[in-house]
Image: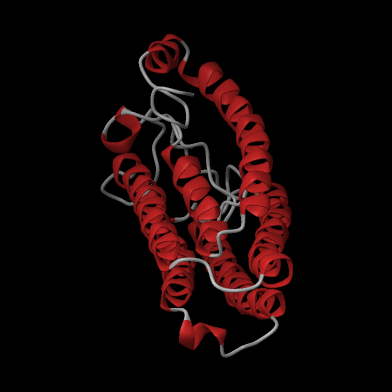
Length: 250
């Protein structure tokens, strides 16, 4: 599933982990600064690659001037990617940080394929232009997904931080999490499905739903196994009264 970056478990907040139990605060701050620089660099490279992938799929670069909904989608998406830097996770142990970095790279490759495939399908299989209302629907769906994903991340950050800014272990069950256990995943899924809608590309849309659904299910099962072990009966009760990803369906 194409999360903009490797998301944390969305029904919980993880307690902070320093480099080592006795690591000085200066080492922790240095690690945070280094991680922020790396993540910023990743975003710059990624959004540049997104534009290149779209241009490759379209075959022309001036397409954006004539398609405002697609341009608006990309502007909103790029803004979301950088906004994530302000509400993302604190760096963990170096080994965990390296694993998270590898997962982000894998997810970004999948997103790049999606961004190239949708305009490719429209341009080289169908030709012509999709109806404008389809593009408007795609943009509306994307904005809703961005609002959900980013809002849920902000809630995680807010409810888990103490006055000193450090994270504390707590099961978040309010706000978006009152209705969905994984609203970040749900929001990212909406964003990804919205992209092929911009081009009325049904093959890519169906493939996105299938692939994203499989990845989301695998990630949700892994996350919830951790949550169940950590919060026990509290999480089991929470799981009984909420849906995982899609209200009233899943």
